[in-house]
Amino acid sequence: MTKRKFAALSAIMCLVLIITSCSKSEETSQVEEVDLSDESKVIEAFGIVKADESKDVIIDFQSVISDVLVKEGQHVGLNEPVLVLDLTRYQAQIQDKKIELNIAKLEEENAAASLDGLTLEDKTSEIEKLKNNLDFAKAHYEQAAEDFKYKENLFNEGAISQESYNQYKKSTDEAKNKMNDIEYELKIAVESNERNIEQYNISKETEMNQADILTQRSTQIEYNVAAMESKLNKPFLIGNQVVSEYANAAIYDIKYTAGNITDAEMKAFTIVNLDSLIVEANVPEEFIKDVKEGQSVKIVPVADRTKEYEGNVEYLSGMAFSINGETVVPVRISINAADSFLLPNYNVDVYIDAK
Image 1 (spheres, helix red, strand yellow):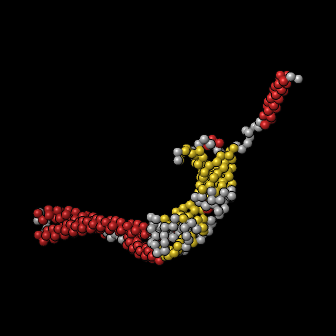
Image 2 (image 1 turned 60 degrees about the horizontal axis):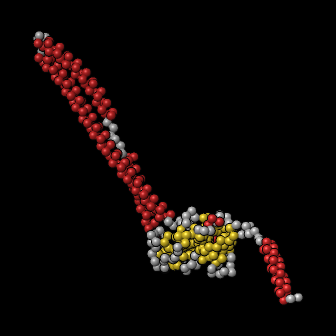
């Protein structure tokens, strides 16, 4: 075989091998294609552990801090004491206010008794009697005057003596004077009665106003006593101790030290319920379309990446925010079984299972 024929045969064999190789490659490529549409899609985000339930404890009455029994960040249980108060001064203020209330109540009772004892001098019967007497006196005078007129005619005709005439005139004048005296007495009695009624009404109004003022004062003092006592009936107060309201809590931001006087405008400390921990995470806007409420979440704390917690998406914010130049949507995530390791303000990575 010549060199030329050998070269041609070699070229043909190489071509066949190349074609065969390409054919097998195509078959292999077709076999390895996989549909990934049903595989899980995980969205990763950064979050912070928060306490969903917390409160600032304010002691809204004046007392002295006898002792602070916890340290910053310390865990406490239900009714475990946090502060000890000296309530001597405040309890004395309540007692003084109660004494003031008792005095006010006595003054109120005296005013009510004075009002009840206020009477009007009744001259109605006296006036009625004078009116009857006046009617009788008028009738008597009119009869006497008529008789005297008749006797006067007889005197003028000489039928009676001067002495008889004078006697009739005297009787008529006496009847008139009697009538005038009774009329004057009636006028005095009516005027006196009117003055009595006016004075009675003035006195009654004065007494009523005084009684009303004392009643309002008693009511106000009674309200003040109740308000002062209610400040000692708070769920975080047992006796002279400020205690935890939660079974599993932590104390933060303690503002007082022993010897301080409490200020109604300042909180004593913040208490957080460690059984109410949640995660607040920020999901980048390009992934938020795949996040739905109820989706399962894996939570990994930065403090210990060997630990994992399970949770669920509870809430998606209705507004996006720009943080460090990136637009994100806040998402709230529940923690199904938090333990004592997980604390508020811990940083965590969250992995949202979004299919």
